[in-house]
Every structure is written in structure tokens, then in C-alpha cells.
Length: 211
Image 1 (spheres, rainbow, N blue to C red):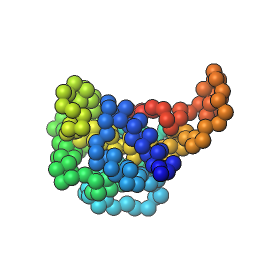
Image 2 (image 1 turned 180 degrees about the vertical axis):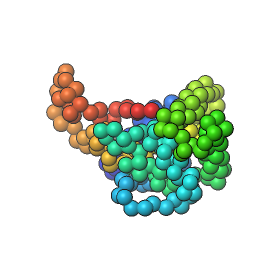
Image 3 (image 1 turned 30 degrees about the vertical axis):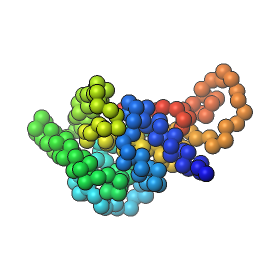
């Protein structure tokens, strides 16, 4: 028998698949269904177990650019970097791990090559611009690819996007503060203003993505 938590995770996977253009990678699915989730930042120093400290810092910044803190928690607040670090270590193959790390190295090298400084030394606007410059062509190439979704080798930036979305929307803050979740729907009310339907927030069963 499926628990509410299992069904919630499966729904989150389904929604992230829609945002990713149709599919979520097998390692990401297995990790989430096995219970891997992002934990809110408690202020306690965190040490990565798969990534180096320098790599983890870049991963954390890219995730925060994708889902920044506004009036709701950002990627850093819900612990996306530790989530990605654990997912990479526990659920991805050696080949997939190496591809992610190589892609991360290429991403950092691009900052030095095009802007003359390490990614984390750039101004915030420059960091965001680089993420967009790498992200948009990757999305277009993925959209135009004729390779079956389950066989595609996603580049670093799209793996980052996939794991950031999964970690965020399966976390408690992401599901309860950004997207609302109602385990047992109440009475049906047709044609009411959005402001009266959940204080203006979208529901956890609807699509919401900021990057």
C-alpha cells in the first residue's frame, strides 16, 4: 500500500518531469523514492561527501540562481547543495558522477575564459547571466534531440536543474511555503478568486518554476 509520502514524491517527480520536458532521470527518481530529500539549512557547517568544498560552493550558487530567495525560501534555505551531494554519491553511477564533475569543471572554466575570473568571484548579475547562457542552449538542444528521453546524457546544467527542482519541491519548505499541499481536499467551490484559494499561492499539484 502506498503511503501519502510516497504518493507526494511520485507527484513531485511527475511535475518535475513536465518542467524538464518529459522525463526525470532514473537515478534521480530512485533517490527521491528511496527517501533522499533536501533538509532546511540549520546554520550548522556542512561538509560535502562527494563534491569538494569548492565544487559544492559553485553547486549551491547555481541552485540559488535557479531558485532564489524572495519572500519565500530559496534553494540554499532548503538545503539543495547537500541534497545534490548526497544524490550524486548514493544514486548515480561512476560514469554519471564523472560527467557531472566534468561538466561542473567546464562551467567554471567558462567563467575564467569569458570573464577572466572564477565563477564565484563574478558579480551576482554576471553569475546569473552565465547560468542563463549555459542553460538556454542546453534546453533547446534537449528539446530538439531525437534520442529517447530515457537514454539522453543530460549536461551538467540540466542535471543541476533537475536535482534542484526535485530537491526543492520535495522539501517541506518548498511544498508548504511555496506550493501548498492539501492531503484531503475540502469542499469544492467553483469560480472563486485566486486570492481566496490558498492565499494566492499555487498548489503543490500545479507547475511553478522560477528560472
